[in-house]
Length: 196
Image (tube, rainbow, N blue to C red; front, side, top):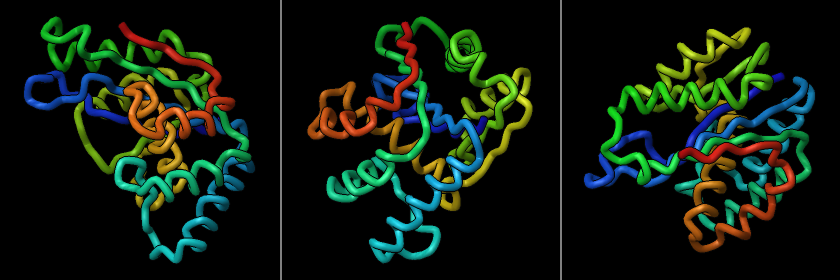
């Protein structure tokens, strides 16, 4: 299997200084390479339809409502599923250090998603090199056959992971259009973990 991983929100713990109250990590799962290639082509065709430059990137947070709908409608028929972990940082504020938080996140993923991660190829967005991704790389190497760090600008399926994570986070916060976006991907959900 191929699993593409990205997140929405930030892993920072200092909520008083603007860190997000929730942090969502999405795992986009393709059972085979053919389904991944087909989905990649769908996304690339949408970029061509929009007359975007080469290496232009779909990014949920930055895209307009119109583009978000176009993207989500494009991938509705694609063959993939997703798991996600949502961390409610507000409930653990001031109870652990950032490093302890990162370790705990990886332990939760290992405990709950082990069967999916084991013997899969994991692709992680390396565009933002924060400490949590270093922990990901270390912990996932213990259970996965292969880990790849790639740039989302040149990987449409990491952009898909960004969109799924962004959609899930927006729906959780009950923001405008959140429920509408979520309705387009809800049938692809195969599991979730909320912590704490």
